[in-house]
Length: 607
Image (spheres, one colour):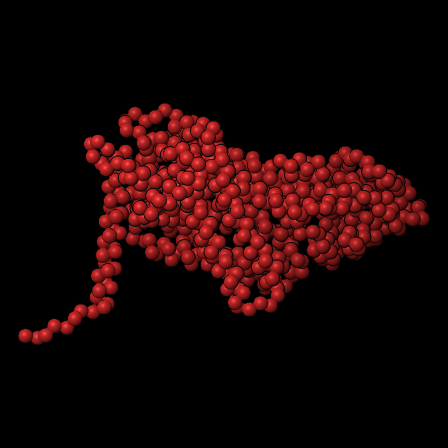
C-alpha cells in the first residue's frame, strides 16, 4: 500500500509511455511548468512524437544525451537538406523541428539557427512504438542512433520499453494461455483413455517443438552478421539459456512419461474418481474464473506501480533551461520489495482458492447422506475462510515466498560471478544449492496444501494442521505416495502443455522485432503468466485429489468400516485405492524375487 501510494505521488508513467522533451514536457499531454525552465509547461496534446535534433551523432555525456529533444506533431519522412526545407516542412505539416522559442519564419534569418535547429541534413525517420521516438530510416544513421540510444538506456527502462512495445503481443499470448487452460480443464473433466493418449502425444510434440525452435533461433542469431546492439546480444544470450533449460526439461519430462507409460488406464480411473467428487459441487470448476479475475486485477495494478516506480524522479533544471529527472534515493530497493510483494500476494490469492475448494470438498465428503448433498458448500467454505482462516492463508503463502528468496539470491550471485573465473567445485556447490532449495520448495508446497485441507477438516491453525498432516502421511505413506505423485504428475503435464504452446507462440511473435526491444524478459513474463493461469485452473483437480486422499486418511484413522463406525467414502474410491495398493504390493514382490534370483541359489548334492 505504501509503495503504491508513493509511486502514484512520485512517479510519472506518462514520461515512459509517451516520451518527453529536453524541457520536461511530456509529448501528447498538457504539462505543468517547472520552475526555472521557461520552455516547460506547454500544451503538447497535438505533438505526440519525440524528435532528436542530432539523431545521427548522438553522444552520452554525464549519463544524459547531448542532443536536444523536442516534441513534434509528425516525423519527417523525407530527408531535409537545408533550413529552407525545414521551414517548408513546418509550414506544410505544422511540425516544428527547431527549439520552441524560435518561430518558423525565423528559421532562415536567425544567426543562431544552427544551434537552435536540427543538424543538417535531417534524415528521414519513422515513428516507432519505443517511447514514440522518431527513428532514422537511413542505415548508417539508424546504426549510430540505435547503438547509442538503446544501449545506453537503463536496463529497467529497456525491459519496460520491451514490455510496452510488445503489449499487444503479450495480451494476445495471455488470452491464448487462458484458452488453452480452459481446454485442459474440460479435457480432464471428461477424460477417456483415447484423450490421455492424445494428450501425451501433444505434450511430447510441444516439448520437442519448443526445444527445436529455441535452438534454431539461437543458431540464426549466431550467424546473423548484422547484430550490433546490446539488445540483440542479450536476446541471443537469453535464447541460449532458454534452449539449455528447455532441453533439460524435455529430457526429464520424456523420461518420466516413459516410466509411467503403463499407467494410462489408471489415469482414466483416477480422474473419474476426482470428477465424481467434483460432481457433488460442480461450481468448483468455475472457482478459477474468480481467482483469474482477481489475479488479473492485481497484476495490472502491480505493473502500473512498477511503471510508476521506474519513472519516479525529481525534476532538476540544468544549463540552457533544460530539465532532467534524477532517480530518487532508495528507489531500486523498492523494486525488490515490490517483486516480493508480487510473489507473496499471488501465492495468497491462489491459497484462498485452494482453501475454498478444500473446504467445499470436506463438507461434501463428511456427509453421511450422499443422496442429499449440503447446500451451497462453496459459499460456506468462503465464509469460514474469511471469518476464521485468513491467518492460515497468510502464513502458508508467506512460507512459500520465503523459500523462493534464497533461490533468487543464489541466482543473482551466479549471474554476478559467472564472468569471473571460478572452479568446478564452486559451480557444483551452486547447482547443489539450487537443487536443494527446489526440493524444499516442492516439499513445503505439498505440506502447505495438505495443511489447508487439515484446517478445513479440524478448524485448527496452520502449524497444528501441518503437524497433523505429517503424522497422517507417515501412517498412510503407501496411499499418499503412489496415488498422489502419479495424479500430480498428470496434472503437471497439463500445465507443461499450456506453457509450451504459449511460449512457442511468443517465440514466433517476438522474433519479428529483434532490434528495438529486449523480448527475453517479456517472454519470461508470458511463460510465468501462462504457468500461473494453467496452475490456477488445473489446481482444482490437484486440490481435489490432495483433499480426497487426506480425507481418506482421516476416515481410515477414525473409522473401521463396521456398522458402528462406517466409512464416509464411497465404494468406488475405496476399491480404486485398494487396486493401487495391490499393484504396489505386486511390484514390490517382483522386485524382491528378482533380487533373490540375482543372489543365486545354493547348489544341492546329486543323489
